[in-house]
Amino acid sequence: MFNNLKLILIFSSILVYNCGGNESKSRLPLSTKSIEASDLYHEAMYLNNIFMGDKAKTKLEEAVNLDPNFGAAFLMLSTFGSNSVSETDNYYEKALSLKDKMNDVEKCFLDIRSSYRNDDIETRVQASKRLIDLIPENAIAHERMAYTQYEMANIEEVRKSALKAIDFDKYYSPAYTILVNSYTFTEPKSFDKAEKFAKQVLAFNKDRSFYHVMLGDVYRAQNKLEEAAKKYDDAYNTGTNNWLSAAKAGHAYTMFNPEEARKRFDQAVNEARTDNQKIGPEQAKVYTHLHQNNFQKALAQVELIKTSLHNYDFSDQEIQSQMSGLLWHEYFIYSHSGQYALAKNALKEKRRIDIALSKLSKNELSVYNTESTLLWLDSHLEIMKGNYEVAKNKLSDLYNRVKTTSDPKRFDGYNNLMGMANLMSGNAKKSIEHFEAVVEEENIYFQYFKGLSYKADGKLDAAKKTFKYVATYNFNGLIYTMVRNKAIEEVAKG
Picture (cartoon, rainbow, N blue to C red):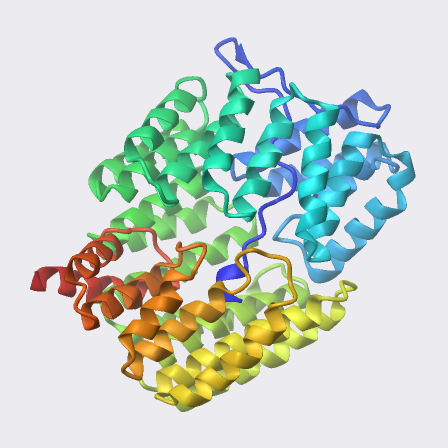
């Protein structure tokens, strides 16, 4: 479902950090006998953690060329979002074939990776615990447990695990990243703590753009948009990831200066190291137009990207994957501008592509999960068209599809849409029941509709609080474009 599309990478930065003599000592024991391959692996993990996955992937490819039996490196290669379906499968199957050559620590990570493909969260929990048993004083093991706790929606345990990682290694930067993001985006929030940890980790990573960006994100979450933009400029001037820094500045400027935002996104495109990186800033220009309520220019930008895909160095699978994402943009814009026939056509074409791509995967759950996501989208379209009972019937089917899965957040997509359907069909109390049943309340789009439900039910204080949160959320994305201005209007009403 829409809420459940996140997959946190199973390996997080497992390497040495150096900055002014401050050095992380945390490393994983690896089975490879090649010192050079091991070093490349750890370099890759570091780069991946600071949003340089393209360079990380190159390092891992070099590592497996040096040691073709390096299963842990193949396993990490299988996790990159830039992979085609076939690449992911091939890397994963190669890692599986090398299981007997892995040590016990690497096998824990293999079990964790497999648990995502097999929808088996219990295996993930047990493998995470086993990892701590094997290397109890290693920060990496506690970092991995933090991710597992997040997926179980145990937010306080997430923070405890991250703090344990820091207790064992005060210079282990990924643990600080977990704490910053947790306190910035997840209830109970604390911007003071988020800022504290962001400044602490920046103090020994000043030569890395990523950590300037992270502090900028904390400022942006507090509606300090100009401070955030300045921090992103600091990141750009640091010079280690200008693509990311320019794009982040663009997202901040989108909220108060769309013209400047588009200039920053152009800058990000020019700084991109890969064709994949160029697409994101181009799509972000769509959002600048939507925040200005200019649907025509937004759709024109989507069409421009679609017609230019053949100019990029993409495989056929990659082109189809990019096209699917662009059709999602078209669908969402059409469905929110009353152009339901065009929205249906976009969804129909997206369905064709998504099913075809899912059938390429060797993961048995791929087609099933794709069909569930498409059913969610069908339900959303029926709500937008005003066919609330039709939508509820589809959502009943969706409920039956996801109830057998192991994710604690498996009903979030169902509950969000049921909340929306009940609100629009006049049952605010039932709407609130569904919205308050959502485990991970990070979807800003549905937070707006939750605010409307509170308002309709006479819970004005809760409504005002929710509208204020949506109005000042400030983290750009397609779904936010449709609710931010409306939330600002609700706040202005008092």
